[in-house]
Image 1 (cartoon, rainbow, N blue to C red):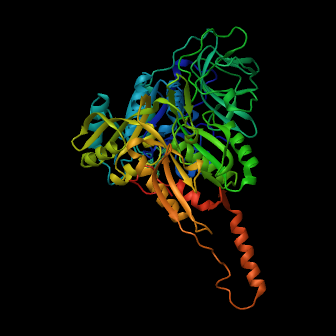
Image 2: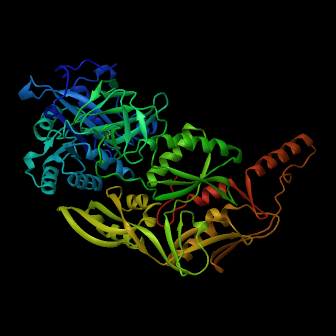
Image 3: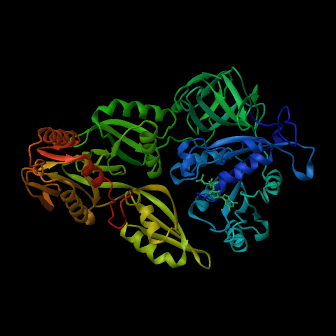
Amino acid sequence: MPATPSNVPEPSRTDPALIRNFCIIAHIDHGKSTLADRMLQLTGIVEERQMRAQYLDRMDIERERGITIKSQAVRMPWAPSDDKDVPHVLNMIDTPGHVDFTYEVSRSLAACEGCILLVDAAQGIEAQTLANLYLAMEHDLTIIPVLNKIDLPAAQPEKFAAELAHLIGCEPEDVLKVSAKTGEGVQELLDEVVRQVPHPEGVADAPARAMIFDSVYDAYRGVVTYVKVVDGMLSKRERIKMMSTGATHELLEIGTNSPEMTPVEGLSVGEVGYLITGVKDVRQSKVGDTVTRLSKGAENPLPGYKDPKPMVFSGLYPLDGSDYPELRDALDKLLLNDAALTYEPETSAALGFGFRVGFLGLLHLEVIRERLEREFGLDLIATAPNVVYRVEMEDGSEHVVTNPSEFPTGKIDSVHEPMVRGTLIAPSEFVGAIMELCQTRRGNLQGMDYLSEDRVELRYTLPLAEIVFDFFDALKSKTRGYASLDYEPTGEQSADLVKVDILLQGDKVDAFSAIVHKDKAYAYGTRMANKLRELIPRQQFEVPIQAAVGARIIARETVRAIRKDVLAKCYGGDISRKRKLLEKQKEGKKRMKVVGRVEVPQEAFIAALSTDDGGDAKAKK
Ligand SMILES: Nc1nc2c(ncn2[C@@H]2O[C@H](COP(=O)(O)OP(=O)(O)OP(=O)(O)O)[C@@H](O)[C@H]2O)c(=O)[nH]1
């Protein structure tokens, strides 16, 4: 149960002039969730004894990894210190922090008039601070610069206040200094939100238009849609229309979060809250879409809707083939809550039945995989992630390739790969290492700026394929964790890309096919062949392992023949013991995949697939 607000009564109808919609943007771990917790406490909507760390991060994975994946909106009453009699309504929108979820961040920002730019006073500006700041500037938000963690002994508030002031063009003394941990300065920060953030402006008597900035699936209530009412008003029980699809629904419930769901009669101009319509799938209620009334609805949607587009694909296969139906059901369930996830069935000669799954990025992939394994108890093999290629053929036809094994054969005119614009920030001593890394990843330096005397921002264009796999790990190890990276898609380029196949005894193992740059084909081929030679147990016959580009063999290894006699050690006559050993061997065989005549243990696939692609970082796990 929410506590009664401590310092103010809730206004009965909210005058837009008293509303402040804001969000907190920050680099990962700079303390956004902790600051949100303090605000919930200070405004009195969560009592001390109910407080648990990161109140707003509800998913288990979020809590464990300490990251925010889905955003939430909370309504808090606040009377500023210099105007105790005027209760304001603060709507705080917690945004996801990771690059993969940039579109959600952008939608959350579009629902706000101002933002708190939170920077760790011991770390300074990082790549995502910048990426989020640019997004906030694109949305014309008022920006309140804040340094957090001033209680830390390592904090350098003066240095980083200057850096922050320089970046956004204000005075260093305008940078607020807080500790989300101790609560120091947070009250003043709330006052500043009321003072600096403009109130929402909309047309109260216009046809209703509300922007969806989040949509989450709840097992009991169906989809809960978070909106900001930009114009007009939405009321309980009326029929509403989703403007991108034309789908209509009845508004079963409308309310605000403070921080638990609290039903209200309606939401008026400028307000932020949730809608429940009974739909069961978040794709019927998409982030960025506009909600209007069915009768006398708005003509034009609010700007800025776009469908999330998967950037990275991976094949997911159950370790045990009989788990296939469970995997499908689990993906169906996750899809209810994730409009960005796509999948279709796929079969692999090596791995059996599975799915080709599309993700926004690598973190998205990891989160989904972990949820499948943890929440649904599935053991999975994931193929190496790949990006989407566009192949133009000489006859003018075009192929979109999301699975390397489907790369077209025949006369190829050109191959196009997705590109990203990357921003890297690091202490200047690591500039050389970063440049070297980006060079090996086919990066192009676009510019470089000093943020302060010893911290540098580097801007690169890079092929997405070169960073999806292990770039973060490589960057971390080369800069001892001091560099940060953010990237956004920026079109495509044509490149000299080829498909490398791996063959066992002359049979292609589709799961190991990869599309790589021509100059890296040889390295990829020899590395995989080598690795497989170590991983594949000897069989009763010789097993050649080859890497090929088209018909040309570029690498070859051989697993020598042997007959593994499990009874060899078992001299003496205990027949039951012998039988046990043979049974055990049979068990082991069940976990073998047969490619042609060759038996490959599952572990070999997993080990081979979990390697890095560039050769300069360790395997992920
Ligand atoms: N000493 C100190 N630690 C803090 C402060 N604020 C946050 N932390 C710690 O910093 C870590 C990261 O804080 P979070 O609030 O999870 O960071 P976040 O920005 O929400 O992280 P994401 O959700 O991953 O974006 C946690 O261990 C917090 O306890 C602070 O003011 N002082």
